[in-house]
Structure formats: structure tokens, C-alpha cells
Length: 112
Ligand SMILES: [Zn+2]
Ligand SMILES: [Zn+2]
Image (cartoon, rainbow, N blue to C red; front, side, top):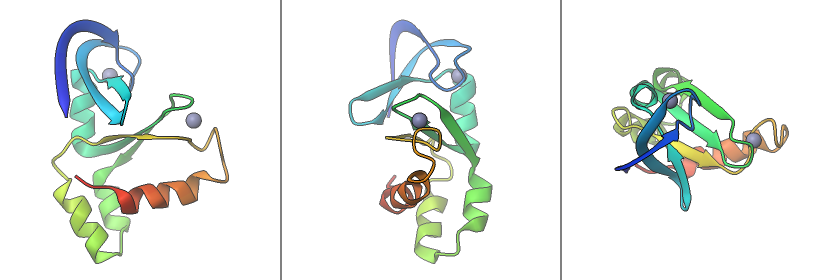
């Protein structure tokens, strides 16, 4: 999932650090992630809006605690130690009404 080359680019998540670590948030969507943000990704699910670039973090613990669907919970529990950064087509800023349905769909479709 994580690739390293020599090109230094601004971190897509925090937009503060330069980093050569990059990954794909969605097919064809390359993002750069600095070591700090990779560390953050261990404890948080990260969604990035591919249309406006806004970044959303949610603590994994919180997500897990709020899930009452057993199977979904199992799926997320397996992802607990993985660094998950996922691209979404739109966010609450781009589409305040559509986003909630969209996130639900993303959640169910998510695989490790
Ligand atoms: Zn960063
Ligand atoms: Zn957006």
C-alpha cells in the first residue's frame, strides 16, 4: 500500500511536511503522507475528499464503539492496526446532504 520514491511532495493530509512516501487513496488518486500522518493513520481512519482535498479523521476506537453491526465490527477490528486512508468523491463541504448516505455506502464496501 505504501510506496517510497525520492520525490519530496507536500503531505496531502496535514499540508505541512514534505515527504517521499505516497500511497493511493482511491484507484488513480495518489496522495503523499508524511511519517507523522502515517502514525496518525494507525489510530484513526482517514478520509480524503478527492474533489476539494479536505481531510477527515475519525478515531478508530470511536468508530468501533459506535458500530452495532457485528460483522462490520469484525471487519473494522481486523483493520485496527492497518493504516487506512481512503479517498471519497465528495465531502460534507461539497455535498452536505449526500455525504451521510455516501459514507454509509463506503463503510459497508470497505475491505482491508
Ligand atoms: Zn502529514
Ligand atoms: Zn470535498
